[in-house]
Image (cartoon, rainbow, N blue to C red):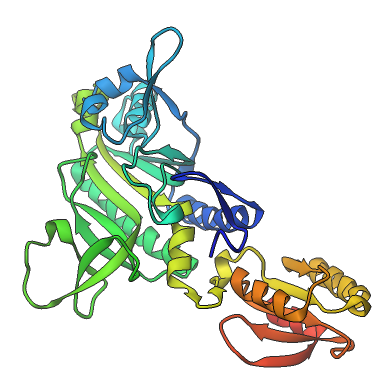
Length: 377
């Protein structure tokens, strides 16, 4: 549906171009994530995507994460990796700039491209070899302070996914190539999902299949899509990379470290898996590429539609105008496929009014332009 609707285009397996409408959706997801990260005290920055081997060697992940990491050599035979994550890079940065307990706690984040050598890039934009992600990192003097912030991130994630229109479940999971500690994933229920999770009845909490270990019968099995994760990484990275701070007593102590990710392009794909029908996408309002889809029918309606388009724009309403010379059926089918929350039709029959139809419903109303603007704002 994302391909047919003109949101994305495939370059190669696992490599997708965000077309203008797809970019608008991801930009709206990004802004919601940014607002909630800033609200909890994180600072935005941007780190490089090309990493020298020496940094990854400090933790041993040049070898242990080799299967998922793209590794390459330049013309001078120096070895590099393309970013599949940024723990080592942010820790290298922190040890240059923080030295005292007074500098902590500190949390930073960025939106950047990630590269992962997926053996099978399937599910369209859900599992790519190259994708966009928000990753945040927090640094602390004590484990207690790390876990306080870990909970803050968990609550911020609930807010983010709630604003995106996604109902998420938190599941305990393994740390994979990131940590030997248990971590938490944020999952959206979907029959097409690759993950199997077990949710405690009456709650939004449970376990990923890989760590479930056959708990009691109070759990229900679901298929799901992972849209976010949080990792309490402890002191392994700071110890191996010699990232130490001085405490109140003047002693050197390793930094306690946490990592927190949300796939922004993946969130777009997950939203479509959850919100669609046999006609096409049904975007949640907060991340729809436009607030309204204006459809003009017939040559005689173009002037009226142009005037209405200008009124909507002046009111600050983002509107997509289909002014193409096609039949009503084809235009309506496209509107259903694209999935913008409200369709406004202008034709000879509507006069100085517009037909109002919500994508998620069947009811069609004839309303004034002023009423349409009022509803849309």
